[in-house]
Amino acid sequence: VSGAHVPVLVIGTGYGGSVAALRLARAGVPVHMVEMGMAWDTPGPDGKIFCHTTSPDRRSYWLRTRTRQPLSSFLGFPLDKDIPRYTGILDAEELGGITVYQGRGVGGGSLVNGGMAVTPRRSHFAAILPTVDAGEMYATYYPRANAELGVGLVDPDWFDSAACYQYARVGRRHAQRAGFPFVFVPDVYDWDYMEQEAAGTVPKSAVAGEILYGNNHGKKSLQQTYLARAAATGRVTVSALHRVTSVAPAPGGGYTVAVDQLDTGGATTAAKTVTADRVFFAAGSVGTSKLLVRLRATGALPGLNGEIGRHWGENGNVMCGRANHLWDPTGRVQAAIPCGGIDNWDAGGAFAEVAPLPTGIETYASFYLSITRNPHRGRFTYNAATGAVELDWQRAWKQPSIDMAKTIFDRINAKEGTIYRSDLFGVGRVWGDHLTYHPLGGAVLDKATDNHGRLHGHPGLYVIDGALIPGNTSVNPFVTITALAERNIEHIIANDL
Ligand code: FAD
Image (cartoon, rainbow, N blue to C red; front, top):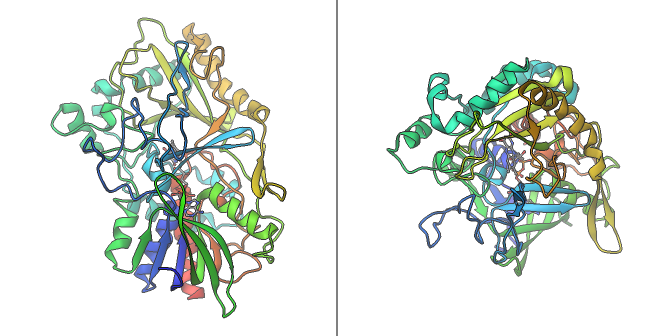
């Protein structure tokens, strides 16, 4: 309701926002969450909430008239197609030299991601966030995050025989033959449900190839975990299809928050203002950075410091495929949830997840998303002429990532006598170096904020999402985002409220 006053307003409903909402509500504080995407709680005309990976419809992309699939071609055929402009679930946001994929809707990235729930090695965490007590993180906050998110491991015996993980077993064999450790990767997907999918006793989701535009069954997104528990407190309200456009000090104390209500075509149907005693920025690395950079540059939040918009990275994401021999089929049916990876981080700077290629046909291809120790960092700046926030990033900055991924795949190719695929990212392109799934940074802990996420210069404003992490987590990021949010909110509740 326009003109309302709330004790706490949370911008965004991804991992950071959901942790903040649950913990504040359990501490007795009413919380209002504002989310620009849709609620994703109502089935479409086909009876399903989410559309399928191989038949994207208007539900697939955020305000685009053509899909922007991470794999843009296959065997020389372009895969993208026209779709109606709609507030779909996956944003392929073009920022300078990189396409940044993000979830849009109540649940944020948890709606679209692969659910890979990885706790980094402690020494890596300590190097990334040196001012955070790693002892506390590994004793308390990582276990807490893993428990709340419902993280589990595939049953290794079932893995060894499941047809839908043939592609992962091929990935394991090739990794091990080249001398690399293959590790199982935990996930928030319900593994018992997946076994039933494979047995044909329940409706199929991961085994049918659902991923990227939402899973209709099996995946424990934030809607099933943190947000469900937050709602159960009775103290949390959520406004979907509402976008925060401004936060500024209110005359009588607290903050005035400007919010646009959107229709499903993306048009603003109402402009509202709310006052809040405290505001948590949880709009994701890009969303939080864009808001804060603009609010600082336009003078709405003049106290923010010069660290705003800095130390942004893409977690070194780079994709590639390999062409296998005819005696190494990867399977026609592929579970869309990855469950294993190749760890060459310490020696080569790369951790590669063995990813599915759920096309429904035999491709004889192995596909990988590598996380690498890319040292390049981007920066968000405000363009006063256009009023837009821009990211400086160049595609050439992915070269270190490619070199690190090659420490794994050149060796596997040499051992197997195989080559890279060059038909997946446009004709002749071997490397998917134009994108990231893992934006991180822009309002970094202990730089733009204090050591617990309080923004410098404006008491009552906090950052609690992936923007706090300086560009890399050495593994998939959401468990770290969740655990850091658990740590920070506990401190904030104990000291600020
Ligand atoms: P988000 O989850 O991005 O949430 C931010 C929310 O804020 C969004 O819902 C957004 O719509 C909303 N918002 C933004 N701006 C505004 C505004 N102005 N007003 C209102 N609302 C706003 N990570 C892993 O760990 N494992 C994986 O397997 C994995 N796979 C991935 C696969 C894909 C395809 C993608 C895109 C990501 C994947 N990730 C994975 C990354 C992971 O999802 C993100 O790191 C994580 O979601 C970030 O959490 P967050 O809390 O920072 O923000």
